[in-house]
Image 1 (tube, one colour):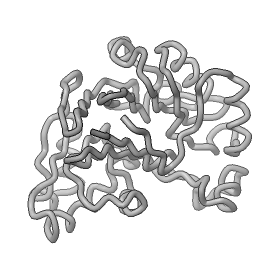
Image 2: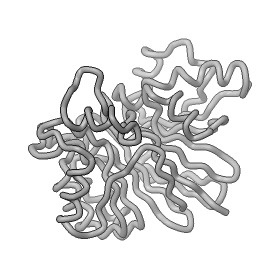
Image 3: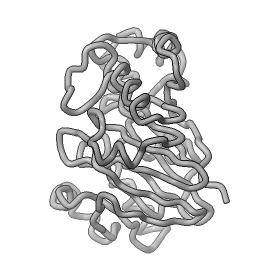
Image 4: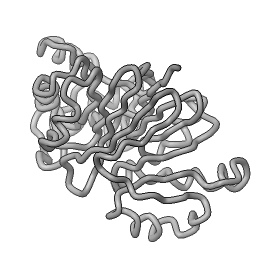
Length: 263
């Protein structure tokens, strides 16, 4: 049975193009909307369920683009705006269509923030604690294991395994040792490469060179860079960054909104 992982958003908190920015990357995306980058998010589709990984502010647009009509489970990686702000999109889906709550997994540190921000969603979600290292099993043989990331607040990344394996870490500064062991030799690593040039926040994110080095360290078969600001530090166009990655060698490329990976 096929499990498809769709990368729905590959940008950072401001997206590409940003409404206020006239850098070369934003101008490039304005000229060619295929190079635009929505806020982070992904979905795994099994023969039985649709599982979201984060619910950012562009969620409605992302679900429509992916032709996703039903959502069964949401894994929330951490409580930052670009990862949780779309949770409200589930309200009328549940109340008018689904008629039963969506299962929402989140780290225990985020539960108080959830109800402070969305007190009106208490009948929309069934909340469960997300536990590092626990394996969650779904249809199509999909197994999802949350793992600790290295970010400014408690944050999870996700290891997905079916016939193939994929590690999804959008917000991380390298990986903790325990996580590296879990993802070593993974078929596909989708990882944070927020900055091009100087890394302004080395405690929370990576730049493209650091992401490529991490990929080599864990021996990933293929690496797709995501959470790309494109205009932080040293603005770069998609065309120029593609050439830079080619020069680095290895199987490192760029993730794009709407990219599907078969697991």
